[in-house]
Amino acid sequence: MEHLFKELTFSNGVKARNKFLLAPLTNMQSPDIGKLSNDEFNWLTKRAEGGFGIIMTCAMPVLKSGIGWKGQLGIYDPIHEEGHKRLNAELHRLEALSIAQIFHAGVRANIDYADDKVGPSANLEKSARELSFAEIEKMKTAFVDCAVRAYDCNYDGIEIHAAHGYLIGQFLSSKFNKRKDVYGGSFDNRAKLLIDIIDQIKEKTSSSFLIGVRISPERFGLDTDEMITLYKILCKNKNIHFIDVSLWDSFKLVDDGPHKGKSLLKLFTDIDRGEKLLTVAGKIFSYEDIEILENNSVDFFCLGRAAILDHQFPNRLKVERSNFQPYSAPVTRSHLLREGLSETFVDYMSTWKNFVSDVA
Ligand SMILES: Cc1cc2nc3c(=O)[nH]c(=O)nc-3n(C[C@H](O)[C@H](O)[C@H](O)COP(=O)(O)O)c2cc1C
Image 1 (cartoon, protein in one colour):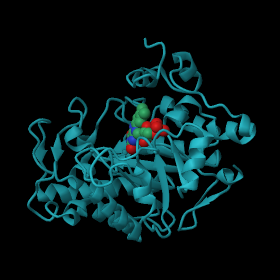
Image 2 (cartoon, rainbow, N blue to C red):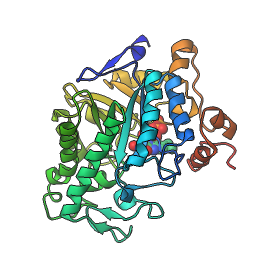
Image 3 (cartoon, rainbow, N blue to C red):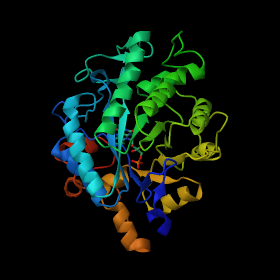
Image 4 (cartoon, helix red, strand yellow):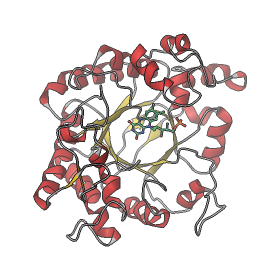
């Protein structure tokens, strides 16, 4: 168990104090045009207090057209800077690294809050229009500008959210991307938006700034073999430091297709990733779960619901060791309020199946 609490060193020399990462978790707590609220500040800093070595923000839109939810934290405008600086000062005082997750919801934008609905191709079902070539260039600039803003606001790095079927994932998918230009067609073309964004962020930030990418291995109109190809491309990309594979269930066996019955995780861990560090997310609820993943060559561990249930997961595990009993859902509203969620976030968690026992 000791090794979980040893430093984690990325290829650029940046170190985290341990191997616990707070997953990016949308929490709807910043309703004032995306300016960081005290609720969102408390939710994140409490996890740093509880021992998480790396704190990641929720998915933050890079443009107003990319907003996916009410109350989503923003980073697309200078008005957001003050909150991010305040957050980073506290996270660093608590000796945690901070990572900003950036995204654009694409055809899944929430038009009650977003000012447009765009995607790689028009999507009638979602009432979204196709981005023009010139708009894709602007989109890249928006991602890069937000990464630079994150850097200027003292984040230790960014994660580009290419998972879960949002804009970058829509470009990767042959189901959503029907373009005929250099951003559509072959898989390399569909991945061009992501790769260009990575490379331009690297150019505009410093070598000490961490760059990671979150990918989905399946679902969301994606082909698992293409995602394995993407993973191989990312493993060779000199400009990134970590890859985050969002498995939803880290212990899942593939349901169908050519890899049916194989471990979804192993499809990725079998690939030589050179110096890139790998984190995965999905149903990591106990020390035993972490141990299995560590034995399967995962470098650090991304906890979502376990971190919502227990802000002190790392600290408690460190002290209680083999006596550590994680909390498990469903839990009461008052438990979650004690764990530093606001009423708004608890309401949101009530919409997740079997999470809150006394739904208001
Ligand atoms: C309430 C909630 C909000 C989430 N928001 C995000 C998000 O903003 N960005 C993202 O990449 N994933 C998001 N996810 C997915 C989590 O980061 C994580 O991958 C997923 O919950 C699986 O991990 P877990 O089983 O430890 O919860 C969210 C999940 C939950 C439960």
